[in-house]
Length: 439
Ligand SMILES: *Cc1c(COP(=O)(O)O)cnc(C)c1O
Image (cartoon, rainbow, N blue to C red; front, side, top):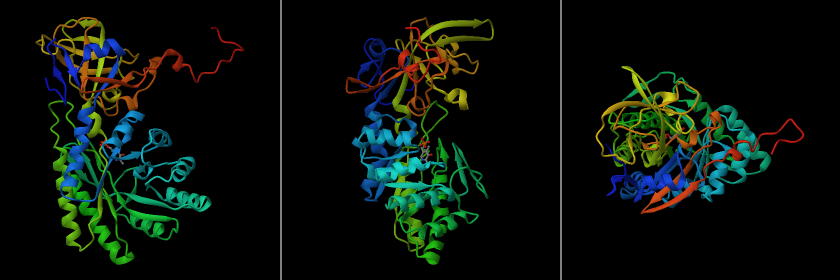
């Protein structure tokens, strides 16, 4: 059993997180329940920030809030001195409602609407990451009509795609995001942007993938960006103040995953950027990175109550829980793997292999295949680890299941940060076609 952060087995033999017995958490807040180990989130945030600070390198570590966007999480990111990435009006609204400092908010997305851009400008956020020519023109025309200025990064695709253990060098990066660096579109965008009076180009942005376990992709990306930046310095007297290398730092979901410490990614990125800057005699840009999953992923645990069981002799034992693809769609969406234990008996020896099924009407609604587990009963508590990223943020109401509650635990204190949805919430937006609805 691999325990993350402050998770441990307490004297009652139960799983404890943040100094609180998970059995008590389930009793108090119900199941399914997302539990976040706040001190682990703080530790992860400091892991990314510290190396920059120690080496005195101007930087921003922006939490990619799409991984888990709620008021409480945005506030925690602020407490840790992070910046914030948002990718929609809704995420921006959440950030503003949480009181996040607007100058540290960055707005991403490949199809921001006019209304979203206006919202960003009206609130004078730190920068807009411009993704395509349509957006560049739209943004410029909105700036003109609102008579405001804005700062932007140009999102480019450097022709590198990183995926877990390998990275691919693609000549023509086939991606829906960003301006291609190889085929001249990035340069064309820069030339256009430099002519726009109300727009200041701070620099370049790239994001090469997700669940990356090596530094190679980031280093190659930095190299590719500098190759262009040095051409652009000569051609257009353009100097990038900011180099944003994106997120995608990998985490340990199962024993197959071996992530690097944040400090190592950061140290190697700094070293490469320094090397490139001095090679081309360019000023050292501010380095921005955007971890999402790696800040919150392993800090989240989902507690489920076990219900029914079905045995197909000689084939499989299904154990069903009271949630599923509604609170964690990642296994169904991309065969994501997770580890889990019985929260009320984590040390008990496994004696059978079971597969954990959700309760939705989809055969694909399986959370974990082939999990070694002690003999379990209905009402036992299953804890699935590492559900902190893209769990709650992708949660849905399929089969009209209410979305679970979220609690933050830290130093023996549990704080409800998202209430469990009620049946009333589920029909809140529904309109009746009758004059009156029963009850
Ligand atoms: C999703 C995303 C991130 C965060 O990715 P993680 O894998 O969660 O670290 C960072 N930057 C951009 C532009 C993204 O789209």
